[in-house]
Image (cartoon, rainbow, N blue to C red):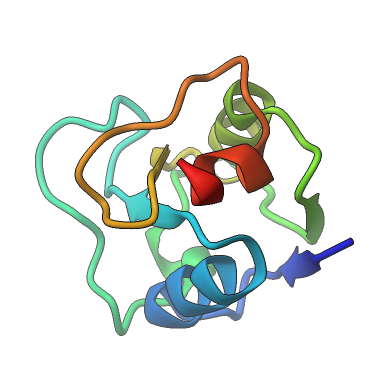
Length: 105
């Protein structure tokens, strides 16, 4: 089963590319936890866009993880918003589905 390790020193563009390669789904990364407003800069590290008071850390992402749980965990750890989208990045994934299923949609 595909998996990736998310770390604070990882750049946004690396996370998005690794996510796409591992699961086939697209990942949208925002500056705020609400997923409203601007996308995060692709050259920024996750630690640099982390919200004040959030510890960050390492997270193992696996394909059978529910989309909603993954998005919630990133918000809790980093205070940033992420949204999983289909492979073509045209539609957001169902939060009750798995990350791998989103890549096949």
